[in-house]
Length: 231
View 1 (cartoon, helix red, strand yellow):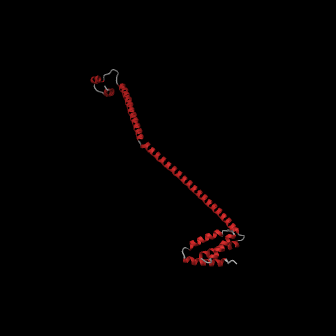
View 2 (cartoon, rainbow, N blue to C red):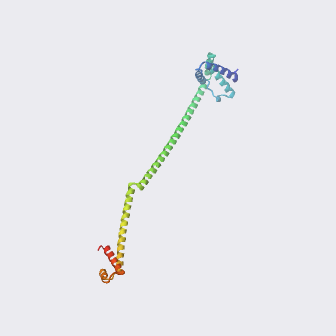
View 3 (cartoon, helix red, strand yellow):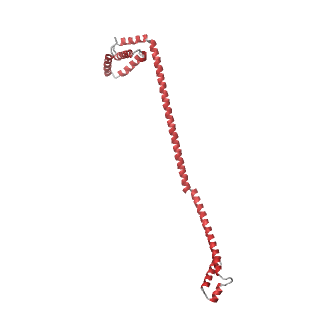
């Protein structure tokens, strides 16, 4: 009659605990033994009609592992392993094949997930690089436009344009001054002629009749006319 889970757990833990206290390499030994046992006792829960049957199967595995790790009833335990393998060779092979298929599927799923992760990272990096390139291009364009604006305001070309404009303005001012002077000269000549008597000699009249206001005015206009005409 199979021992209960409670009694099996206590006995197994007791033997393994004492072993681990005495030997630091027992953990690795336990792993190696468990791996060898599970290659023979490789059925899964789906292979059992009830959960109780599956629990008994797991208890058997733990008992065999504990015996082999602790060195208890080793010949009998190995014989038990051999008998189970001989009696269940076909099911063991089928279970091993299913486990291999499941492992391959899990590995493929893991690889697919990793490829997807790498692709997402690559896409994110590409997007970041594109955004950085666009931002750099925008900064370069802004700097170039700012430099062009500075050149437009205070660059050599701007200075040449300002010099040309100043020269044009100066020429226009001189031309306007000449025009005003010519107009003023023409206007002054008309006013002088308006006060002069045709054919009169201002100087002779001054000598003959003495100085009066009109003669003085006429003489002043005569001298202005002579000055403007260059005489």
